[in-house]
Length: 226
Image (cartoon, rainbow, N blue to C red; front, side):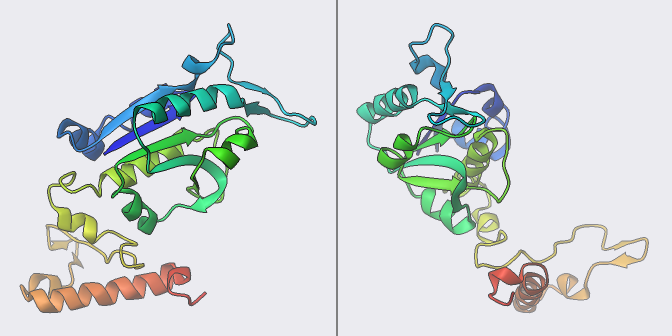
C-alpha cells in the first residue's frame, strides 16, 4: 500500500509516522508513506502557497495551482484509489471507513491548511473529504496522521497479533470491554473472577456483555438509543 500526504508543513508529520506500528509496517515493506511538500510546486520566489480569498474576508486560502501540480504529478506516476482532503466539514472518520481504506492500494491525502483550499480542487480532484471530529485544528496534518495510523494498523502483518485489531473499539459498533493484567489483586482492587476462570466460552460471553453495556452507557449514539 502507498500513502502520499501533501502538506505545507511536512515536519509536523515526521514524528507521528516514524514510530510504533506505522514504523514497523514501513520497515516490513507493508506500506510506503511519502510526505510531499506543497511548497515544491509553487513558482513563487517566496514559496508561498496561499493567497487572499476573492470577495474578501478573514484568512488565507491554499492556491489552486500548486495543489493541482502536486496531485497531477502523483497521478502521472500511478493510479490512485482515493484522493482525500482533510477538512472540518468532511465525512466523519470512523473505524468502518478505516477498514475500507486499508484495502486500497494507493491513496493521496491533502492536508488542509489556512482557511481551506480553493473550492475548485474539492470540486474536480478530491474524491473523498474526511473530518476527524467537530472541531477545528491549526491544519490538516494531525488528522492526516491519525487517518494514516488508523489505516496502517489494519494492514495484514502490521500488528503481530492481528486478532488484537479485530477486537478494537468500534469494529462491531461496540466499545471494547474492560481489560486487566497482573496482579489480580492490587490493594484490594480485584480482577473479575470470570477472567481468572480459564473458561474461554464464558469469558467471551462476559466480554461481549461488557462491550454492549459500556457502549449503551457511554456511547448510546452507536446503538441508536440516544
